Each structure stands twice: as C-alpha cells, then as structure tokens.
Length: 156
Image (cartoon, rainbow, N blue to C red; front, side):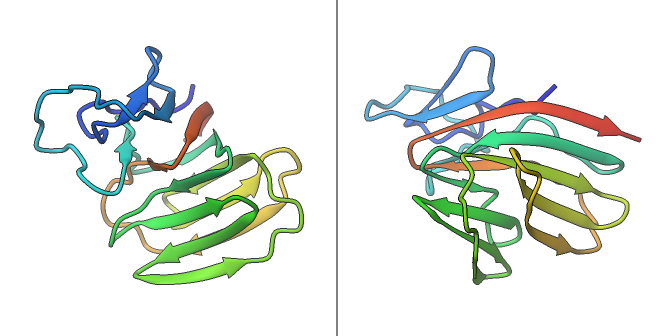
C-alpha cells in the first residue's frame, strides 16, 4: 500500500482526500486546528510513515507541477510543467528528461543509502541520490496543483 498523508503536517490550503492518498491545492483554507508539525510555507504535507530500514517503492502522480520532498535537509525531485530538477543541500540540478512522466516511481533502499526516482511507466531512471542515511526518512509532497500517492511495496 502507498504511504498516507499526515493531515497534522499539511499546509492549511491543501485539501487531503478521505483515504489520505491525494492532495490538491485549495483556494479556501481547510480550517485545521493548529499543530506544531504543520507547514506554513511552502505548501506541503509529509506522509505519516517513515522508513529507517529495508527497501520501499511507491508511485506519485505528479500532475503538471509537484515536488517530492523539500526542505533544507531533504532530497527532492521537482517537476514544473515539462521540466525536472533535483535538489539536495541547497544545490539544484536540472535533469534531461525527453518524455516527462506524469507518474514518478520512488525507490528507497535505506540500508544501501540509495534513493532513486523513475518514470513509472517505462521505469527509465530519472535520478539517484547516494547517501548514508542516519535518520528515518519521511516522504513529503509540495503541491502546486494535484498529487496522488499510489502503491507501496516493501522488501525486507
């Protein structure tokens, strides 16, 4: 099953579906109560699950614009219309993606220190980060329009 979105972290103008797998920008504040984990800016939400071992795979319908993970200490894939880039440690690198996918596969091999992004349709690699992970990883989405989480597979 796919990761689920944490409503306590969600920016107040993000509408989260009842199954906690789809998030959409809303012009209307959602009126969620204050929570210390709530994002004020940028408009994002973390997933409830974190990963600290094993291999995990899930897919994200990135629509026309979406960021997968975004903070000063995260690994990020950004999609804006037909362009892709990655970000880590404040460094942004543009990617050459001949056919930009609308669905991106995310593969985390925590023990090997590998986080990879793929075109979910063709499984063509988009980018991989190699890092020694020292803390649990929480998937996160920054929303500009609409993003959905799909199937999650775990291999231990």
